[in-house]
Length: 489
Image (cartoon, rainbow, N blue to C red; front, side, top):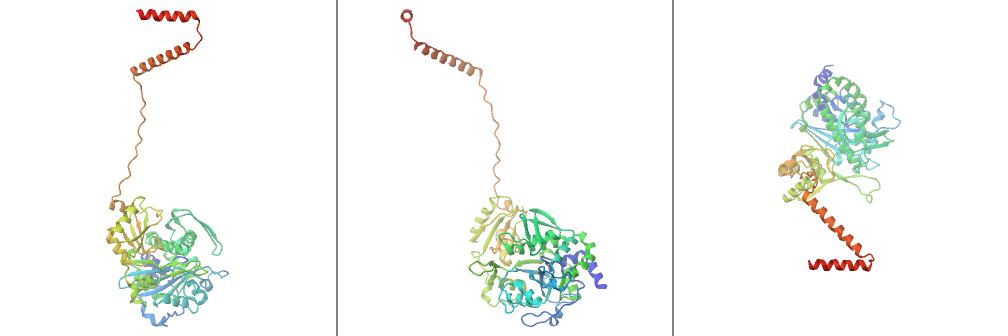
């Protein structure tokens, strides 16, 4: 009972601190979602370290950094609701978290579900198959394997209903939908139908946003949207209106979560998260590329080993197997994408020229971001935060954003905001003023001259017409006589 009072007293801070740990189908919350859960069976990493040996890692206060594997599990057909079988499906989402009390930081690595991995007990070379074939034990071992044998100390598995329920309980979350999203996913029983622009999404709509995959980035686009949702949820959990929802959240979330975190360990995580700020969170996606059709029959995400080594070192303090892989890329090697979110079409080209003058040679411009931004962001797409900081200092512009939500082919994505317009002194386009039409009015003198001219022309035409008519001899003689008279005069 005392422990429950502690949870309720934490209020807003508890919920916000808890938000980082879960992604159910996208996300859930650790403190709220796994509070009051009993410890689950042991999990061992590749070196055989078990939960009992790691017992000192998590106390009411975190004494050491701890790594927690979070998995959002796909819907399992025919599994009875609230039965253990609901956690036996493919891992739709994999997230490895590092909670570090020394520098009070939370590092999050998103692992795409189609990541190719060869491991003895896997019959299919995709990482999302690990939970199906060996549960959380095998999943933890596979993740440890691909990250240079990093230790995985605890796990949290969340069923598909958790995120929907959580979002509904907090009254929805505000998300910018970048495009029209509409299709039916019969396998996961989803009717995806979202309009573009800023939306307040309920639980069902938030799951649609997370699971949408019919764009050019496929599964990787889903990972990016999951990070967007996690950030939006974190912001919502900071609002005072969430406080009355705490008891209900605690009760509701239990049925959706399976974990080997004990209640004391959960309280230690809650205590750790009470004073965290947004700047203390860093998110990144496992770097890589899509496989080509001539490589494999199935579609895979092929891990970039060099970038993986850098993330394992910077995020999890796990040394690479080859020291040479940590060599910092030079300015000329960095792949930098420019994405315009300022509304000023000239800005990307101005920044492009500036970067090339400063030695950044691999710069390219991508499709504009649909939402206008005030502040320029430098997005750490491949986990190289040092390069992002150096780029920001070189430009004198841009807030470093540790989230893989930029162009997936880049090392860094610069999302240009309106603050770049003043920085680069973009000239304002000339204002086109419509000239008033002046009606030409002729003066009286010109008008009279025109009338006289017309009379003269008319008289000449009449004389010409008359001269062409047949004439009598008497008329001809009369005319000749008149001419002679006029000459004498």
